[in-house]
Structures are given as structure tokens and as C-alpha cells.
Image 1 (cartoon, one colour):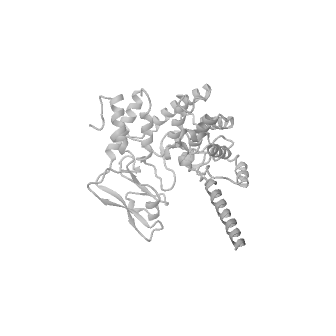
Image 2 (cartoon, one colour):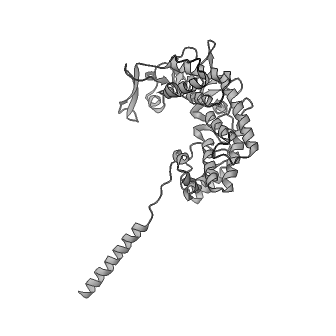
Image 3 (cartoon, helix red, strand yellow):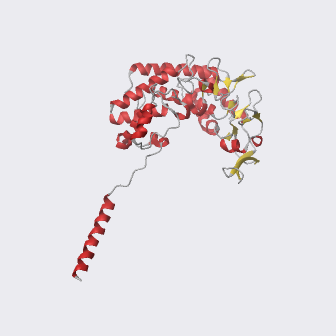
Length: 372
């Protein structure tokens, strides 16, 4: 009996020790997603986790100074993975596509501001120098640099590429936080690059029947003409990408007459091409690998929609597929493309309902193109 009591006592002490150890043990921290890295509380950027991610950002930075796209820089890496990434630094795949490079630079600036670790400042400078070098003499930015091939050589508004770069450089030029550490020489170069970019934007605005409209996803790097991209992305005026372009032009303080005209014309075009009386819905469809299809149904009470692509000259919504043909109804393209791409959206709604009225009252009170 005595031995049993001793054994039970030892077992209880063991259980208590395990329980206390479990309580004191920290739970493993899952890396935050890259999409959330720029919206953390200020104290985060001085943390060990922020520094770990920033070191990953530097690891993926190419020798050109830019970054490739679609890389998860927040993931915890094994040493053999790091060796492979280092060996790829000489690749010429740096890009501004899918928010690459300009978002990496924003993150490095935040971490440098919080830590003052010199390696993050130098990585930031290398990236800014890359963006300045990648800009065409006419003010545009290609999607990928220095590898100028296919549609990636074109001036690119798709996915906010050029606007993302210009917004960053504008913040640097205006000495905004967290970019006060940037040297005067780069601030001046950033200011010059932004002005060249504005001139390029104005030259790219598509004119039909003597009227300015909006922008394409890509424009020719020499003559500014609208260009196609992937097989299912035809030459068109874009109801999505053009919103970011207009917002950038609206952000210009004391805009000149040319910028005001560009904004007014684009807003009028957005209002003209809005589509009413229809709604886009997901319809269950077991034959589609996604389990649904995207269809258009009549609905008199639906809010306005805009097409992603409008035919230049007619303003008819157009659609594309992998065969590079142009279609005039979403129902005519393959189910894979109907569900694998965004063809309709409400992108300009807030621009027309909120942003433009405030801008118009401030900068052009005598002319409201919406007639409100």
C-alpha cells in the first residue's frame, strides 16, 4: 500500500509538471500573410517576426533591385530553401506585376524606420533605384524589367502596377512617413519620375470621336496605343484598371487644366457606360470544376455594373477566351473563363458617388459632368 501511495504521488507530480509546462509554453506563431504585412500596428515593425520577414524580403530581392511576383515572403524557410533563393538572385524576372516590388519597398521602409537596421535601408535604396531605372523615357513603366518580352514590355496599368509605383514614388518625393530617411537626391529623382509618369498617363488616355474616355490595361511603350495582353485580354477600354488611374489623378494637388480634363472626361465615360437592369450571380453547376457557373440575369433593382472590357468606339462590353477571339456576351465564352476571371464589377461606383463629388467641388466647382 505504501508503495502504491508513493507511485500515485510521483504520477501526480509528473502530471502537474506537464500541465505547468504546457501552460508556460508559448503557442507557435503562424506567419501573417503578406497581404496583411503593411497594415500592422506600428510596434509590430520592430518585432523579431517583422525583422524575420524583412530578411526574407531581402533574400528574394534580385540583383536588379526588384522582386519577382507571387512569392510568399512571410513563410519560414529552411536553409536549403534559402540557398536556392540566393542562387536565383541573378534572374531578370523583377516585376511590378501583382503588386510586386513597390509593396516590398513599403514594407522595408516600415521595418527600417522601426529598427534603424542598415541592411533594410540599403535594400530599400536598391529597390527605388530599380524603379527609377525601369521607367521608360516617356514616363511609363513596363510590367517586367529588364526582361522586356511580349506584353510585359508594355506600359502597364493592369492590377494597379504603374499606379502602385507612382504612388510610392510620390510619397517619397513628398517626404511622407515612413520615407523621411530617404536622401534628397532620390527624393528629387522620385519627383521627376512621378511628373513624367503623369504626362504618360495623359498621353495614354484613349480618345474616341474626339472625346477622352479612360485607359487600357496595357499601352504601347512607344506610341501609347492600347494593347492586348493574355489571349483572353483583348484591346479595350478598361472599367476596372481605369479607376485607380483616375484616383491617382484626383490625388494631385492643384491639378492643371489637362489633368482636370482627363478626370472629368473619365468620370463622364464611367457614367455613360454603366450597365443597369442586370445582376451577376453564381449558379450551382456540378459539371464545372468550381461547382458553379457565372450567369447574368435581369434585375430592375440591381445596382449598376461595369464591364471589365469595353470595345473602343462602340463601348460594347466584350469578353475573351483562350482562343484570342472577341465575344460580345459572357455566356459565349467557356465556363472555365466565366468562372476564372472577373468580367463585371462595381469598381467605379464609389468613385462616382463619393470621390468625384468632393474632388469636383474643390477643383472644378463650375462643371459637374454627372449633372448632380
